Every structure is written in C-alpha cells, then in structure tokens.
Length: 129
Image (cartoon, rainbow, N blue to C red; front, side, top):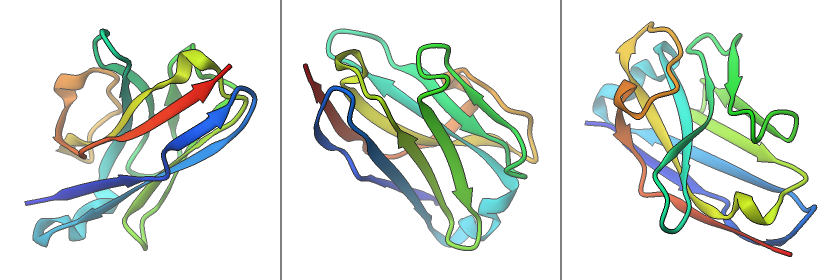
C-alpha cells in the first residue's frame, strides 16, 4: 500500500556529512502528512536501533542520544519526503539506514520498531576513520 525508498547513502570519511532522503508513494499515501516518520539503523551484527523521528506536524523531532546535535530530521509534506541530515559522522555511524512510517495516523512519536508498520529497503552508510 505504501512504498518507502531511501537514497543518499554512501562512503564518507569521519567528520564528513551525508543527507539521506526517503520518498513515500502509493495509493494510500496521499495522507503522508498525517503520519509520524522515523529513521532507524542497523550495524553489522547488531539489532536495529532508533535514530530519529519527526511528528506528522513536523513541529516535534526526537533523536537518539548517540546522534543528538549531529543529525537533523526534516520533512517536506508537499513532496512526501523525509530527510536525515547527518553531520560530523563517526565510524560508529556505519550502518544500513531505514525510514519507516508510524502505525497510527495522527499518532504520537514513538522510538520503538513496533510502532512502525512500513519500512524502506535501507541505504548503506559507511564512515571510514
């Protein structure tokens, strides 16, 4: 029903920046602006973890402590996209990054995987030291 496609990943040196984008499409996603969107990541051998989320209004943002002050999440409801600006990247940021859609329309912001019901295929981010 909804397709999420991430882009913008790549290889960057420590201290560098990348900007990830997630484009939403699908017949039911004319309501993109009514869903909280989140970013998660999964490093090799580790569980997927919460990175950032932005409320459906765009007024509230939430970050994992590990990325706070370095990453910025934003959304463009007119284009049905959500972005993750990643600055001052560290080798420990290396992971596959996923965007996800909240289960609940007009819901609150959740930081757990179970709160999201649609996921993109992921984009690889590699930070070299």
